[in-house]
Amino acid sequence: MAIVVNMPRLSDTMEEGTVASWLKNVGDRVEEGDILAEIETDKATMEFESFNEGTLLHIGVQEGETTKVDELLAIIGEEGEDISSLLDGSSGGESTQEGQIETNEESVEGDVETNTTASVELPEGVVVVTMPRLSDTMEEGTVASWLKNVGDFVEEGEILAEIETDKATMEFESFNEGTLLYTGLAVGDTAKVDDLLAIIGPEGTDISGVAENFVAEAPKTQAESTVEKPKETPKPTPTVEKTTEAPKVNPAAAPTTDSNGRIYISPLARKIAEEKSIPLHQIQGSGENGRIIKRDVEFYTPSATPAAAPTAKFVATSQEDFDEINHSQMRKVIAKRLGESKFSAPHYYLAVEFDMDNAIAFRQQLNSIPDTKISFNDIVVKACALALRQHPQVNSQWFDDRMKLNNHVHIGVAVAVEDGLVVPVVKFANEQSLPQIGSAVRDFAGRARNKKLTPQEMEGSTFTISNLGMFGIESFTSIINQPNSAILSVGSIVEKPVVKNGQIVAGNTMKLTLACDHRTVDGATGAAFLQTLKGFIENPVTMLV
Image (cartoon, rainbow, N blue to C red; front, side):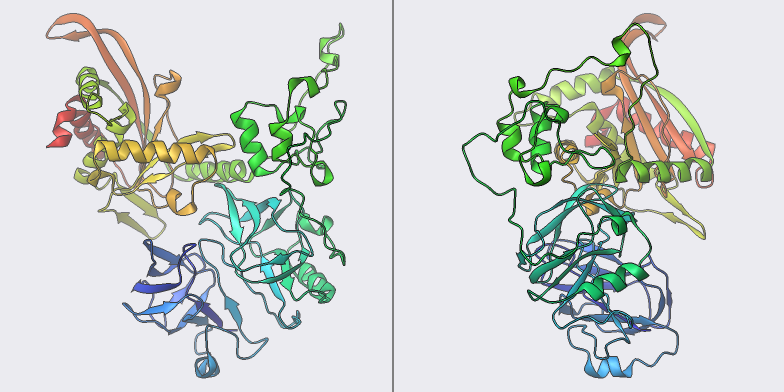
């Protein structure tokens, strides 16, 4: 069955896109996950990934041509399949023969996918909204919060829900308008990409058959036991009240949690609580179903906190005790990716120790310039970027059927967040100045901790740096961020006795460990890279030449 691929919406302001290049030709086999084309938007040129597999039967927009979002871009189907009827009547990528094609409107920003299968006949004006793929590695998503309730009217462009992915919690924008007739997941529930998320359509439409058929055919998920049935009476939105009156709090009551022990709290309330270092378990929610909302945190006082009851662990007779914490989407993906890397890539490690005296003096002088602030990590990023240009083998990537030697340098900088680790990417780091790198890394780190990074900002790295020096760690090893070939672990700067010109003097040194994939980087190649890196870091003025 042929699939019409429309021009995707790759940014929130995108109205049309230009095909910069096609990575596939008519007649080529396309696998799910293959890069189909490069699309130039109003903000950047981005890779457009195929979410379908089959043969590329038709290209509707040639390289250099521009078309509006949702217009026909390409058709994918079975080799030799007749698509003349689709080409004769295609307009905006809409189906001309119901039950024979599917409309694919998937994009990096989470465009709505409309599922029309032969066994699910949609009433007029009804749209099935499925769990969007909001990052390149996303396989399932968790509903962090609904911004609309069943019965609410949804405008095109309004935020429908907040979805927790493996990388961040992101706002999911509706690309349709109508009444929210059905939600397939409760807050805290998880479903795979393309599973039923919601149904939007004209008010009063009977969609019970649609929901039942869709759920019956979709892979079983946690949502099946927690599906919320459509209600005739719309429920009021609970979190938009404006009041100066403190919420009524029952000091003896605990915050509401789900069956997995997860506390019901809005993302904004969670952010405020984290900024004020308020323990979530001490806040009583006044929102719908006991959900903690903004005003609960703002009016929180320690006096409203119940006194902790003595537990068995403090009595004379000791007993075993533990807490169970469910894995977040981020933690599950981190575990999967690192496990795949560690046990598939043959790691080896090269450890070095650099003299940091010149780097310390260089940083002090540079930071004396008004409005300039760089860190030692910024110096390492810049030095690595320049060294990688001289050693492209270390800047390579391993794939099952080929090795890619990258001529561009995109450096991923590991940032620790509450749920694990994210790796925002400094693009074209070798072309950026030290202040530019410093500004970018600080911005990434701040937004990473608030889960405000976009998937595009965490994609495309060719090399990764992990720095634990600020935590007092002198040396450590890291697991390679595949498909990259290497990752550099950076320790703290230590003041200690060193030998210079035959004399023992006070000095400052820093230990670094390069983890390499032996399939792409031989030992001598890794060692040569570290020698070049040593020259830049020990004499940082050379990076300015």
